[in-house]
Length: 209
Image (cartoon, rainbow, N blue to C red; front, side, top):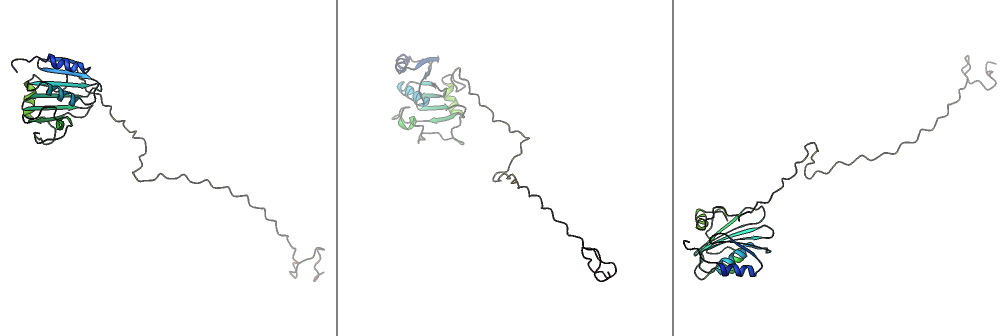
């Protein structure tokens, strides 16, 4: 890393793919363009450098990014998509494999991975590889993390219905009952106070006269 290599041909090749290329740090390229997989772009750029030590940032038009640090046999890849956590990989491929080997381009695990627990976490060894290129923070220069909106706070005044509970049905409207028909009053029959017999319409008791 003492003698910074000339990446003019590599930069020209990447620009021929219609990518914007800068060298923010000696020995470190930053590639920007319309691509969906920044990791593939960075791995292929590192492979084009051969066995020359190189670090490459690739940032897509969606602002997703990847960083590849290649210093044979060390291959460190860091990716970030949106607001998801960074995903680190540290590999030591054999001399027969380049950084753009198909298994690496597909992001699959390989026998050359240095496995961490939990997976895809940074290690001191991986950070030491980045430090060789003067990189202390993996995100590319000028990258701003996306703003994640907080979920809405529910209104505590609302009545919560437990899961699986059906809401109560409104009572059915009842039809009004029709008014009762008037009952005719029974006729009053006069009774004779002496014999207690019914008095005819003449008003004179037939028994008592």
